Amino acid sequence: MVIAVAGGIDEEFREYVVARGPTLLRAAHRLTGHPSDAEDLLQAALVKTYLAWDRIQDRAALDGYVRRAMVNINISWWRRRKLEEYPSEHLPEPAAPGDRHLPERVEQALDRLPVRMRTAVVLRYYEDMTEPEIARTLGISVGTVKSTVSRGMAKLRGDLAPPENRRLEPQP
Image 1: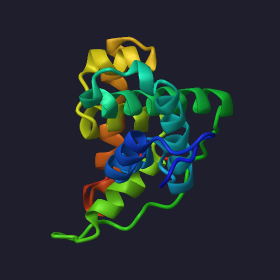
Image 2: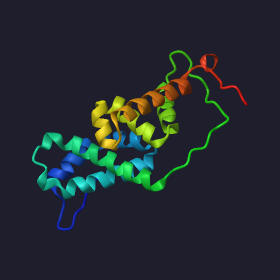
Image 3: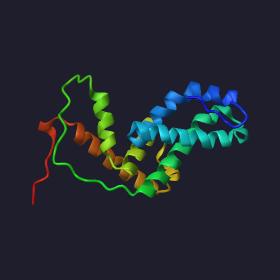
């Protein structure tokens, strides 16, 4: 990933993007759940970072700046889209003990979570943010963060549980 700017390439910024780009792209993918959306999100965050480059004095805080920009941009995007969710009648296949595909299944289960729920879970367990930090980032209360993360983790556990351990809701 190379960022070309009118008047040339800022070498320090290019080095940062080359060094940290793959890690930041993984974080963006966890936030969005889709590779192409993750690329767009990271690109938008890097543009904001480049524009603020001269104002960022603590270069050690760059990852935090880019990640915060990604979260804020992602929130703006999903607020604008107002995506609808549709229930599915099909349950995924259970993980076998020692399943080598478990990381992929966890990613797929994360993708099935509603956007705000996935964002809260990713910030809590992948980005290791505290509940108050998540609340400030998402613009919600700490109680809402707690319940959203709790419901998200319950959905993930249910989604990844073997069929014999799943509880199916009785049909009305």
